[in-house]
Length: 163
Image 1 (cartoon, one colour):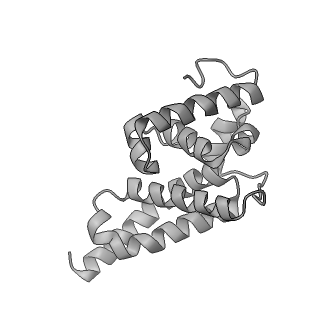
Image 2: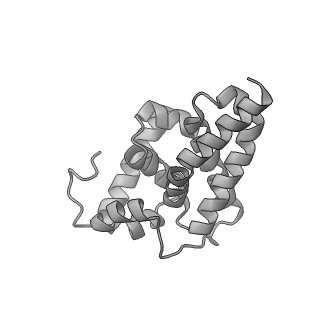
Image 3: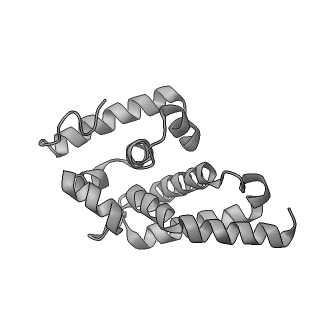
């Protein structure tokens, strides 16, 4: 691809998918400003690798956002800032189930598994690739997260989030 084609495809992708990336980032971190930062950081990193990832950038960008969020959480453990606002479409689905607050209380890796499996609709294998972990780790993190969500939201029916 020529430079102009790369720039055009990158711009086109950002215009089309930025809102979805921000929703995913928000669900990962629970803060609208930090979500914007995560997406911006991932997109900045993507520019340098766009020739390689341009055909299918979504998994690559999700991995970067998850890794950056977990790295940031480790650096600032205990200082996570949460807000009461959430992007509209994600808010509607999450608020109806009463999961918004419960999601915020999960550790970052468990939250990432739930977000990738249920909100991004990834398979266990795709989630494992996105998180750079084994499928077994995804399964155990998923089971722990679901168990914790059921403790936090007792009205959560078994068919809404299954093990």
